[in-house]
Length: 309
Ligand code: RUB
Image (cartoon, rainbow, N blue to C red; front, side, top):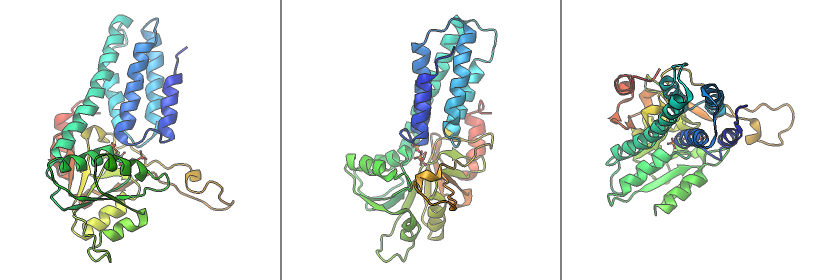
């Protein structure tokens, strides 16, 4: 009988947003696979597969809008497709594949952050949304060159991921100003009454479509629209391991209890976790292969990640 208890705990933590953000979700998922492959004893290759396959399915379903997860699962599955492999070959092959993908997540994230250095100038104001480790680290990396700038961040209802974002910037000794979600498009207006004069938007993403659209925390769509209308560049701190090559990603909707726990009967609530931003509103995507235009995604993914299917 496969022991999936520790995997189940990580699935629950991902679902409960104790682990959040596409990169952290993927890292935790592949780390628990790695830990369990090392911790558990498997009698034969069938026992190993009886653990691995359901574990991967459970993790993949924890949040439905995460291609970095299914691309990794596809990568591992491709390495072990030979059903005849004995345990002594299958186990190290599986462990190596998981380790390799974990390494890829970290190295690509680091490369993308470095590729985003130089986007911001001294004195700039930048708006970010939700909690994206990629967007935050890219903004902080821009400051590392000695340049100072102002960061605005949205509250991110209903779960208030802004608390995490604010703490990350505070730890990096950066000045951060919080705004409520519904005011974010307004502060991008060149005529906003406070004259905030935002110079750039940098947001993360959960999924990148082959046509260059991206999926990110709900609210990204209206922010990108307002930025586009005001000729403010919108950069996506991305990673092409997040490409939805199957065009199968669903926008996650979450329980209405997150919005109004004791709502009266008769009221419907739709609680979208993400929205989709059309490529035409995006200036560029900061990736591990450089800063690319949204319409270059298909060609770059085909060239750099031919194994993605
Ligand atoms: C987080 C979110 C982040 C992306 C990218 O939403 O939308 O912008 O996941 O994150 P949630 P990263 O809080 O619902 O997971 O850059 O860390 O991969």
